[in-house]
Image (cartoon, rainbow, N blue to C red):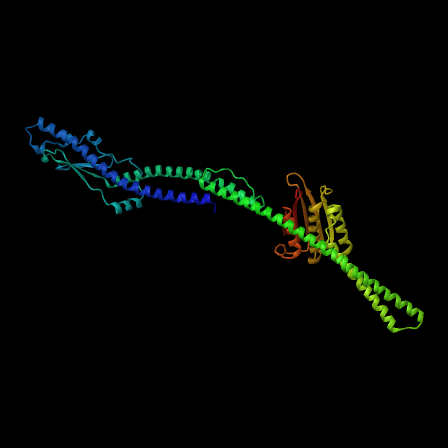
Length: 464
């Protein structure tokens, strides 16, 4: 899972927790708001009745104090305006058949769900009544008692919660959205770092990264740049060492070829000459004596067998010398040598797989080490396809790519149905040798599954 999505998911969890906490807080605040409205209504009505009480006391002093507050005087529209919605106010002592004076409870909100009403009733219980004295100086003047209507209180609490939750939900969505954008913007440089690592995986070790504002990302970018620089230096040093190793090995091959030619070649030539002399001498003596001699015949036959064995050894030695010496591609050019190589395999394997040679681009000026390496790759791949697979068709494609690539592509593909994975993991000297040669020139070698067999492709930079 992407890091941005993980951070956004965690942010949403935090937002959900905060929204839950806001819901709980809004529920408690809604419950308390009803209590506050009840106390405020009782306070306002008591203050209004206090003024009415003192007016009656001054203007109607001939009446008893118990009858100073007639019902008709305090149950007015002005008093109703002082009572909050859903709150009922009662004047005590209560007169006969006197009902509480309640604030407007219709239209204060939608009916709450039953589960909400049950939960609030269970968690918080009922609201307590609030009593206020009409006059602090005369306790006999009466009191005002206010209590919220249970159904109206629940509706008020639900409406309060809904209003607060709507605001909280909108804020939570806005915070989640803008925070997600901020997170995505902050982590956007990670894509550049990943792209740089992918380029490094393909051999482009020296990759430049911009200077990031975030200190952590800047440290990561610096570490990636340092790693790429060290990898580039190590690759260059390895290439130099590999070239030197190849040069030493080529020198050893040349020295070995000279030794084989000078020592074995001369000795084999001497053996062949001696065998020819023995065979000729035996034939002359047999002709002079005119007598059939089994011994002389056997000697002549042994001499001929020695000559034949020597010829076979010399032919094998010539093949070995051809492989030990540098291919003629270094001097004669790649195109001519490849044509000669394919013709040689075709002549040796007339009934074997059909070999197709596909040359693309101008190969006339491809010489030297690049040509020698390309020739070795083609030679080794053709040898493996002919010896280790049941291929009926082999395609050797050499392509010169110009422009920014400026490289030589060698691809050998067969239809022998081999296992590309096993071939890639092979530790044979042939594949190991050509891989070292290609790597030493800054190129790459890949082995992949073809449509009906195995495909081996090597890319060699022409600037090598």
